[in-house]
Length: 157
Image (cartoon, rainbow, N blue to C red; front, side, top):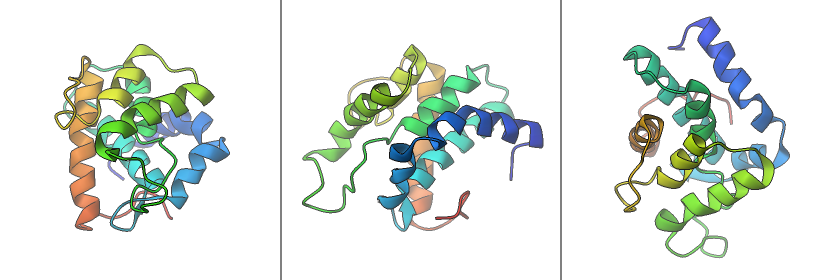
């Protein structure tokens, strides 16, 4: 692990509320990239976003960064399966994830920005916060790493 023990504890505290919800945990049943589940991907993006902010001493709202990243792909369907996928998934899923997030959790403005803007520059909605820029960047890095299986899993499937 790259984070220090107290940072891991903080990370776990930030996602604890989500992990208690069956709908959030159900993301483990949907594949995101390669053999990586949506849950694993989302938690990896949250972890590495937090890690980068700490490593480079970027002053961020760490709680919102972790929470927004964990919820950025909370769309609850397998976009690889034709019957279950929404048309234009890459463009539409941020809004679907946001709608699911506000259905179950209290989301602040930074978390909203992260969830809705994480697909930039594919979507034209530019992130307004440092946290959303970080998550957008880390999301792309994790997606490439997962697709090509070039880093180890953070959680067990």
